[in-house]
Amino acid sequence: MIWYVLAVVLGLALIGAVAALVVTERQPRPPKPVVASAAVEGREALDVVDAGLRRLTGECLRSGRSLPDMYAVVYSEERLGLLLAGAEEDAPAPWTAEADGERWTVSPDDLRRGPEGEPALPYALTVTVGLDGADRVLVDLSRASGPVSVAGPDEEVRSLARAVITEALSGPVGALAEVTLVGSVAGDGLVAADVPRASRLHTAASVEEAFAWAASAEPGEPEPGSPDVTQIFRLIEGSSRITVQGEAPHLFVVDASQLPRREGALDGLRHGDALLVLGDAPAGWRWRAGAGGSLDTGPLGLEITRHVGRLAESQPASR
Image (cartoon, rainbow, N blue to C red; front, side):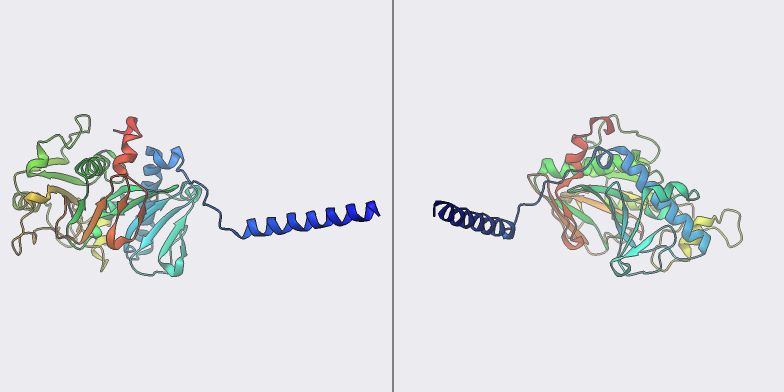
């Protein structure tokens, strides 16, 4: 009788334990913390992105196809992804089309095995905006239909802008880009002293002056048949979406208080260039930096948990 009672008790205990386990399994578990690797946070990530964009440009050139309408890049060490504004399911090798053609992906190993790419001129204003968990996110600023404004705490906005400018001047992706600091941002220490101040960094008193200087510095469209008509020029010219005409894309940076608001004041901003405004202002893309280091990218819908200014602060060697 004792053994029978003991068996019943043990059986009931086992049933209770199983029931408790089932209940526990059904309860939502908190997501595991995801942290970007050193390879994603460091300079080597930009080298992979540059190799990917160069390879993409080269493949499109060799096949005679138009460049895809890319607006962002996501890098997770295992995969490099291009986010496209329009669906294109026919991706050139070694890229694979995903998400109904709105995302092209490739592994870094496949990039190393293929032929060398071409200078990624039309994507030269593709810069890091921050991290989404374990992923590094870059955005092509030239794809904005107007200025890109960044509002939020002044310290966060300035650190983000400083990191964007530094990457455009010293990173491999923006090696062909020009940068002009306009008005007060030209002399208030926004750019660190150790950033290479090469011929690609300029200053201007006003947006109008900056646009005029950039227009006067253009090499001009070469005559048909001229030896100056490069392969890259023909490729970009043949695209209905990428309108950079062979000259280096230009990034202008200005404080919101000095952004002219009169009608037509920004007509001098060429397609393929970008205007970054520090502070809240009418813009094609309106972003907001959070006090905790996050970034709301507005219409882009990209989740940024740590913006590039915070990322740069954790990478002292890349300053």
